[in-house]
Amino acid sequence: MFPSFKRRIQPAPPATTRQIVVAGKSLPLTIKQNVRATRMTLRIEPGGRALKMTIPQGLSEREVNAFLSRHQGWLMTKLARFSGESQIEEGGSILIRGISHRIERTGKIRGLTEAIVLDDEPVLRVSGGEEHLNRRIVDFLKKEARQDLDRLVAIYTGRIGRRAKSLSLKDTRSRWGSCSADGALSFSWRIVMAPPKVIAYLAAHEVAHLQEMNHGPDFWALCGKLCPDTDDAKRWLRRNGTMLHAIDFD
Image (cartoon, rainbow, N blue to C red; front, side, top):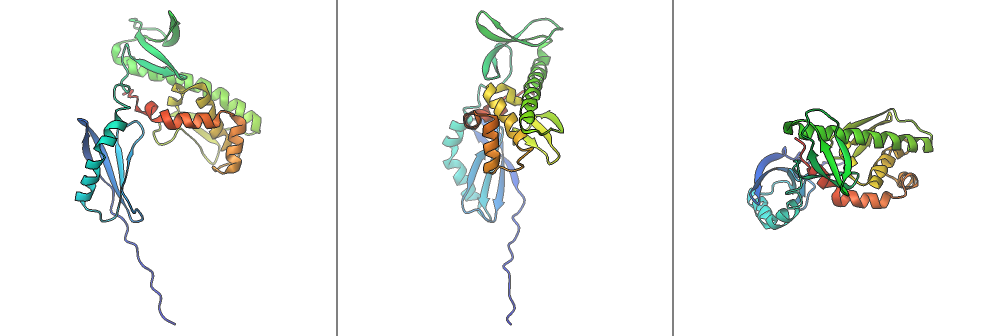
C-alpha cells in the first residue's frame, strides 16, 4: 500500500480595506482574496457607500489597480444613481409607500409628523427643530412600517395556520428581512418607502419561512400563493432596493 497525500490549500490572507476615489468621492474598498476565485469581481455595496472586490489569491497590486482603472467609468455611472438622492432636507422628497412626498417643516416645536395632500401634492409635514428633521422622519417611517407589517403578518400567518414568535424592525443593509428557526421575524423599516405590493411581498416572504425554512420550490409556491405580486415585487426590489438603502438619515 502506498501512502496517500492530500493537497493542502493554504488559507487566503485576511481582507484589506483602503480608500478609492470615484468622481471626486472617497469610498472604502474591501479587497478579499479567494483561493477558488478565477477572476476579479467588483461590487457596489447596498446604498452605494462602499465597494467590495474579490480577487484570486496572490494577484499583484498592479493587476488590481489596473482593473480598478479600467472600471472607473462603470463605477461613475453606477454611483451616479445615488448622488443627489440620498440627502434628507427640507424641500427635498421622501418615498412613502412608493409615493414621493415633499418634505416640509411646520415651524412648530411640537406636533405630529404626518403625510398629507396639499393642493394635490403629497407632503410630509415635520415639526420640531431642523436638527431633529432626520430623526422625526425615521420615527415616522418606523411607525408606518410597524403598522403595515403587523397587519400583513397577521393576515398571512392566519392563512397558513402558523404563529410568529415576534416581529422586530431594524436598519439592515444585507437583507430586507429574516425569519429565525424559532419564528422570530425581522424586517428593515426602510421597506415602507417601497410600493404596497413590495411591502406585502416582503411580509409574505418571511411568513412563508415559518412553514418552509428554505428557498426551494415549495417555498416559492407558498410565497406566490400568499402574495400574487411576488414576481413583480422581486423585480422592483432588484431595480430600486439599493436606492432605499442609499438614503442617509444620519
